[in-house]
Length: 62
Image 1 (tube, rainbow, N blue to C red):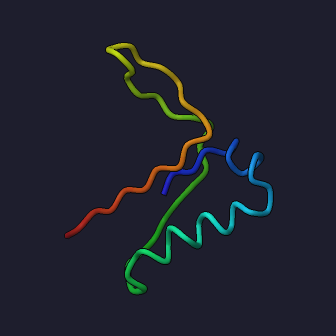
Image 2 (cartoon, helix red, strand yellow; image 1 turned 120 degrees about the vertical axis):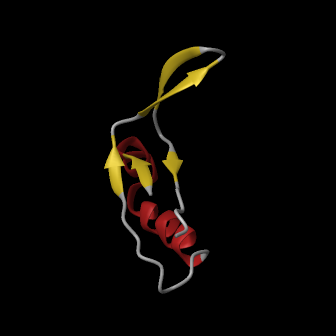
Image 3 (cartoon, one colour; image 1 turned 180 degrees about the vertical axis):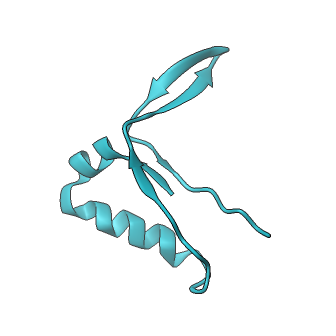
């Protein structure tokens, strides 16, 4: 999971609820890793822009 640090600042202590809700949808034996970012870069209408206050989850199945 990649969570933008600004979300933690906006949500305050409630950020733990968001993470717990995301984890609750995953199998309990699934290895988890995550970190805070300072925004992400992604294209919008063909131009790369910075996004913040995002929460991104990626599941890699082997």
